[in-house]
Structure formats: structure tokens, C-alpha cells
Image (tube, rainbow, N blue to C red):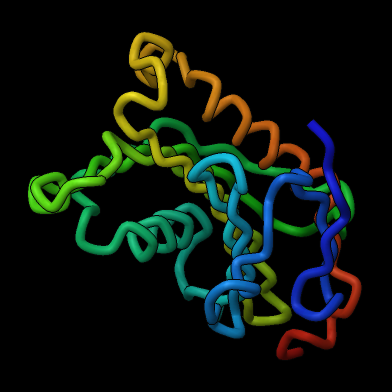
Length: 189
């Protein structure tokens, strides 16, 4: 898999993303606080979101952001793992966490058709206290019936399957290469 360096937020941040991912803003409007990249060969997306810092302890803030992403499907979301994270190119005191969760669509969504069996969510939260900001990076991995081998995926047994294994490598590359070049992008305390 090859990666390209991508400028985010007008160059205020950089990161290496898979070369087969495209900037969604080239095909539809994206909010100014987001950057969204979509796999040209599949359904996986990577979303960068600059949000106001949530006034909660770190792990509660992580869960808060996950619930915000899954919205009404919070009861259909299962949290599998959560860990602290280290970004190679951010200041050493930067607090960051990752989680792996799965979300199963509601019966209504399934009835409408085209809903995935489930979506794997690799969520990373960077807490920037001085900047009053939470940076949320989310790798979303929809698993659509017939497009993956169900026998290869069982999070309860530690089996992620090829799609989630690839997504984990994307997340790990983000941890290694994500860099903030212009801290003036954020509100300073």
C-alpha cells in the first residue's frame, strides 16, 4: 500500500493517507471544520474533525464523541477496545486515545436496503487543552454483506478481517505522520 502526504485545513496540518483515497470536498460540500477522504476502491472513509473541547474527563470525552458520531444508533454500538495513543509528530505532552467500536444499523435502515451488516469505527481523539479543541479522527469501515467473508470477522475473538486490518494500518500511519504545522488555526488560551 502506498501513501501520499496530504495537506489538511489549507496546509495547517499534514498527514500521510493511502494513495487510493480521495478528498470528498471535490465532489460534495464538507463543513469547514472537517476533512473527509474516501477509498476509491471501497467504502472506507477517514474523517478529520476539529471540535470544541468537551469539558469531560478524557475517556468520557472519547465516548461522547463516539456517541455524537453514531447519533441515534448508540444502543447498537459496541465498544471493543480503548487505549492511549501516541502521535510521533505532536508534542510529547499531547493527550490522545483510540477506540475500536462496531455499529450495527437499525432495523429501519436495514429495511430501507443497502445498509451494511455493521460498520467498524476506529476513532482517535487528540485533546488540545490550551487550544480548547478536540481533534477527532475517525476511520469508518462499512461491512456490506457479500463484500467480505463473515468467517474472518469476529471482534469478540480478536478477528478483524482484511478490511479492519487495513483500516488499523491506516490509523497507525496517521499516528506516525499527523502533524500540526500552524497552531494559529486554533483558539489560543
